[in-house]
Image: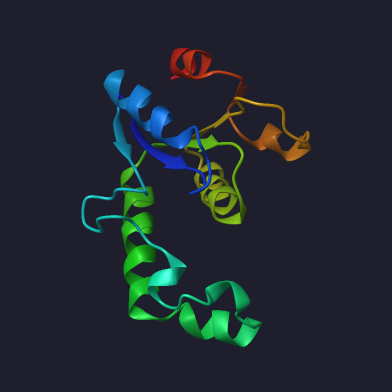
Length: 140
């Protein structure tokens, strides 16, 4: 069985069911929404409720805020632990950065695309794109 890092977005409606399906199939799974050592996961709002209005300098400064450092450590430690990444679409920059890191390390990186998305040529870097959790589970 695999040790899987699920890379996705807080806004992704499929992420919880993907985590559950992977666990039900016997895999160990890191869930960034409910990490073992950081209940509730990382949120920029824990640093500043006005985070969406930050200018670049504020964002850069807050990357070293203790809350951001803890959130990063939890996620990156999980990336170091995992041997597989599942990128669940739709998602944003962080998840794509994480998936790129896995692919760059030569680790299995799979994409789940359960709904229509804009085509992306560079997904050819990954080990496969799957339209359903069932087909992704078969590939694992």
